Length: 301
Image (cartoon, rainbow, N blue to C red; front, side):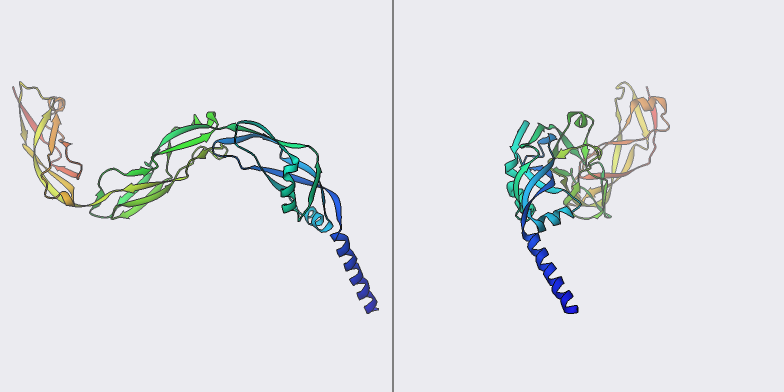
């Protein structure tokens, strides 16, 4: 009895294999993905994406497709250009054969796939890095201006979306412990909303941060007056202040041209509580403090 059952089982498997290998005609749902066009400069306005295909395929290939939860996915290449394009269904034959184990495309519920492309609007923005915070190690600091590459980015999308974008910057970033000049790669912040289809020429920028070692120095600087009345004599107490500053190490032997001033209008209003300001200094100097923070003035007319 067991031998009989085994023979019947083997026979059934052989019959099933032969049946599955035979070809037949089947109706297969398919989904078309449009590719090949420049997605940066063009967008799809309308396309025929859902198709029902009539194919000749083996029972095995048809069975595998039938148990899939997804329709047959086919890629259709179109050319760049604004307007409507009609691509004959026959151009999907190769895709059908590759995606469905040698199946042959016989027919479809339409004779062509129509695709309409529209040119995207574009705007160019200077890249802002104000959200990037560079923190330096002790006795080190920025020397010069950071350099951004690329310094501009072009965004592509619907005009009504681009008109609402005021600026393009980088994501919030903090880089600490900087001791040497170097390049940093920062992602571009995509703050135009998750529902807006906006394309950009690149998704990140490089920032060069020039760094120099600094040493502390102090300078004795006389107080001057901005917008002074030439007919009036002024005496300050004290007549000079101490400027404490960080100086770039390579410029430590330079004699910087410093100017500390108070405004004449402030002298007329409150001569006993004047705050001196450092109004002229070289780029290699970083102000720490001015002592004393307040001075007095006597007006002699």
